[in-house]
Length: 306
Image (cartoon, rainbow, N blue to C red; front, side, top):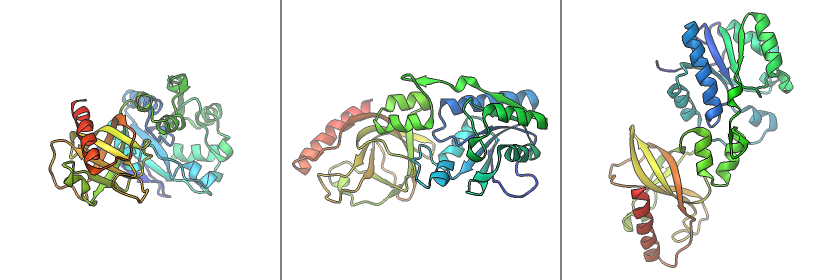
């Protein structure tokens, strides 16, 4: 079933009901989030109700702290992953300063009246003004309305002795620990960007690149990576540079360029999903274009056979 996505409005029926809902921000869509989805889907099959994601845009932290929050998964990718993991509808609630003043009880009553009869949360979930709605209070009040709350303790999973969370994954990514990120989210870390026309210097060296822009996700540290490109549902091996291209540029602007092996399509303006498999090396400034070309040939040999 195609995922139904709706913005929360004052309409009487914002979702298909009855439903079982998971509640959260779900940045990264990591293994803890997936555990919630799995429980919701199990309940939906038992009770013949609709598995639903209730989430917020923008991230509450951005509104409450007035600071940009690094994003692990863009909204477009997040919605695709909800569907991939079996959730059939998503209710996006616009998070505002006024919404932040809502009590947990009022919010729970609103979603219950909208048709949420079962609610699946993790052991650290908090909602409402000042995060006063703890899991215990959520369960007590939602049950009093006639609903059922399922607290999934199994999401308390760990990688390297750290509990899996979006914030710990951001730390892992900042350190360039791609294996830990993969273990936390259950798949290679990926970004999505649109291909724009560059200066085509790669063509002159025999390594044409797709230059990605409009990237919303947080980038791994600068360097050269073995990557996979997903384009029109087909995967291609590639090698990707994240950096300032010091050998050929003095702009000191971070760019994302990927060379796709055995590929010659014209993809200007197209969207690509880029998954990071491993790091080959740090970016460096070479003494000449010829030296850079020789290094790219070595990189390509390793990346193409990995």
